[in-house]
Amino acid sequence: MSKEPRAVLLLLSLVIAGHAGRLLLGAPGAPPGELLAPPLHGDADPSRQRARATQLARPLSTHETVDVNQATAEEIARLPRIGMSLAKRIVQDRGSRGLFRGPGDLDRVPGVGPALLAAIQGKVSYRGAGAEVTTLSSDARLSTSGSYGNSEGPRGKAPVDLNSASEADLMALPGIGRARARSILAYRREKGSFAAVSDLGRVSGFGGALVARLAPLLVVR
Image 1: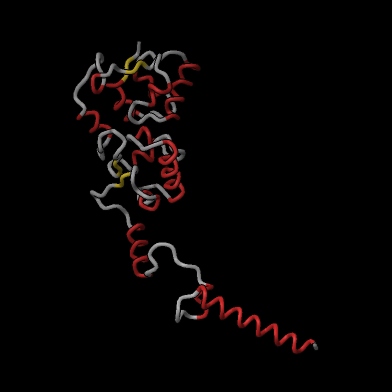
Image 2 (image 1 turned 180 degrees about the vertical axis):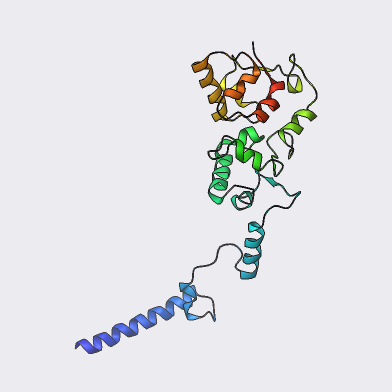
């Protein structure tokens, strides 16, 4: 057989195979190119996709909050000073280490620090972690926990001794994550014991406002 008839037979075979594949895999009456187009994930309606994008891009309203224990990365990214990259780290940390009980737990995520916690204060809530649901500032949480002096801390617990507390003891305090707890331990190793609770202001990462909020929870022995 010459080359030309063989070429014609090959082309006919390809056409027949293509039609057969379309009949087997494609929906009846589907356009020829439909098999080549991948299905869209989620809502395929462009108008609803645009509406969702607009919703996620807009800033939070005055009384709107985001629950960091339930929100998606896209929703968390709406918080002030939190981009998509950090929002994804927050969701990943939540999945691997458990729910956030408060700002102190959120501070364990790389990229979250005192300045960011101050920026999102009042805009976040923490639900479902066995802790109170809160969107209050740290000052408000302390004031509503009841008054307590040097003999007792919140909920009847003894105050934490800055000079003997372990890393875990320090991380249990509001607003202190792993980084701050380790800064306190490093200060003790390098500078010696704290002479007063106010000396906490000399530790990296502790400003006057945070020291004032922590003061009722701490003691120096």
